[in-house]
Length: 367
Image (cartoon, rainbow, N blue to C red; front, side, top):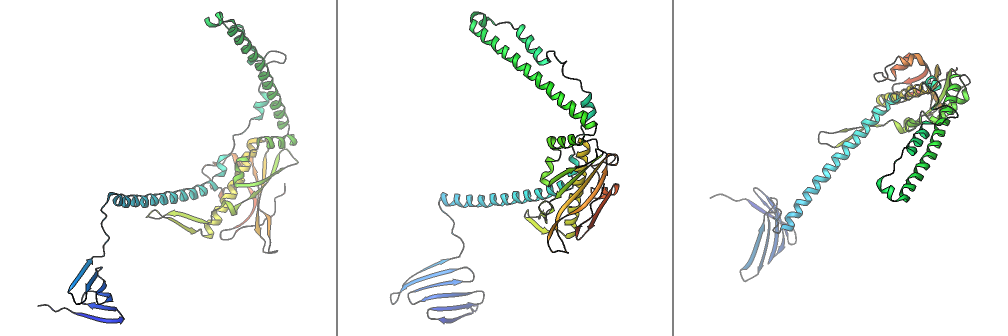
């Protein structure tokens, strides 16, 4: 027969450690009632009446109890489903975070691609008036014809009040048509006058058009504080505040193989590369919009940013890029395919940029 190895150690009153060949356990209690837990997962409870020989022993394997009712079974299924839903939600959130990061990077390097369509001021000037002065306009003529040629319906011939109501409505439409023609003529006069002044190089009209048409309004999300000034109709200066701190991401976001979000700090080289592309893309966009709006030959763009001065120890607003962009050269570039930072080589500019340090203060270009 086989030998069974077992040792028992008392470690406290009513508590013993039992060591066997394949497992170990701890038992609690004294005569009449004991409870044992084994490393195999087995649990044993024994209850007896001393001196009677009557006892009760219950053993369990330690495994979870199988539910009996449908409510418990459904609860387990629903809990599992909830965990799966939360996992999917986490995955979708992670995907969204990565998509937002990638979109932000793409936006920073493609701001210059959204330039406005050019305005042909010469064509506007040459556009004839909608109708001759002193004569009826086309909208009024159409309303008069509708009034004069209107034929009442069978019901309106029976009920005269309906016919009279219809004719009064047509009369109101003629009055409204006169007002519409008046507005049309007024708009034409205003545009014709603005076109004449723009083509003559009237600087005040330049600023009026910039204010009313707001050509850079849609890129205020990427910067702000635009200031326009000039004393010569052949060029215009634009000061522009850069917002690198809020616009350029500091962390790269990716999805792991298991679908979790991974974030890590961008390297200094990558961060400053994005910063440079962002600034240069804004500069090209500003120049493109100015050329689309005004008949100037040159656009001077001066980008400013608040950076820490190593001389004073304070954050100061300094010029980090000053560039002169001419219309003819910019028109030859394929803005969809250029690297906006590399493209500055086509123009005269001041910029002091280090790959691992970023921008430094530079002198503003003089006209």
